[in-house]
Image 1: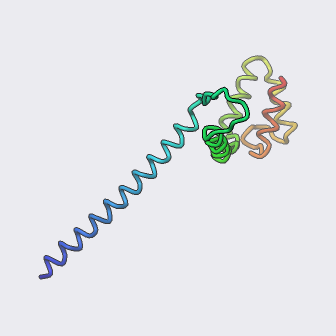
Image 2 (image 1 turned 180 degrees about the horizontal axis):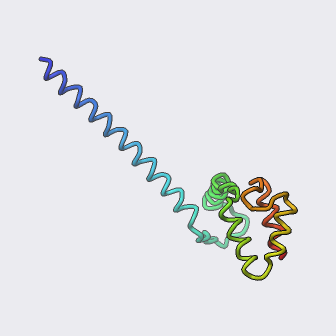
Image 3 (image 1 turned 90 degrees about the horizontal axis):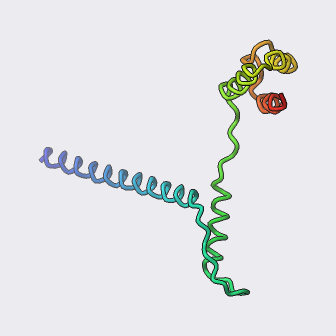
Length: 128
C-alpha cells in the first residue's frame, strides 16, 4: 500500500511541475509578444474619414500608453563605457585634456572617480 501512495505522490508532483512549466512558458510567450509589439514600427492606416474615431484610434492610444510604461529607464554609465570614450579622446590627441578632466573631478585615475560623476565627465569629454 505504501508503494501506491508513493507513486500517487510522485504523479501529483509531476502534475504540479507540469503546471509550473506551463505558467513559465505562458509568461515567456507574453513577454516575447510584448517585445515584438514594441519593436513594430508600422503605423496603422488611417480610414480617411474625418471626425470619426474608431477602434483603431483607441487601440493605438492604448499601445502608446503601454509602450511609455514599458520604456526602460536610462541605465547608469559603467566604468568601462567611460573608459572607452576617454581612451578614444586620448588616442585622438587629447591626452592632456583627459588628464585635466580627471584632475578636475578630483582623481588621478578614472577608477578613483565616483560613478555618480560619470555622466558629467562624459559630457565634458564630448566637448574635446
